[in-house]
Amino acid sequence: MRDWKQAERRIAAILGGRRIPVSGRGRGDNPDIEHPALSVEVKARASFPAWSICRMRRSVIFRPLRPSTLEASAGL
Image (cartoon, rainbow, N blue to C red; front, top):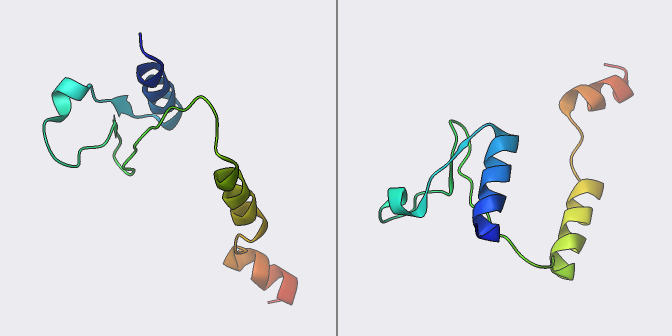
């Protein structure tokens, strides 16, 4: 089995979705994984690019606080 197929199956299991085989997608913008709330495309790579890791770290560091957290800290 190809690594990308295995990656799609693993991600589908984690998200509670179902992998759609390439032959079943037809043409168009169909995702790799069928899910009721998400449109999922899986990309399997041998290594992760450094720029992408930096962006993920920034998004975690600078993510907005939930409104309930802001209200609690403001004493509302």
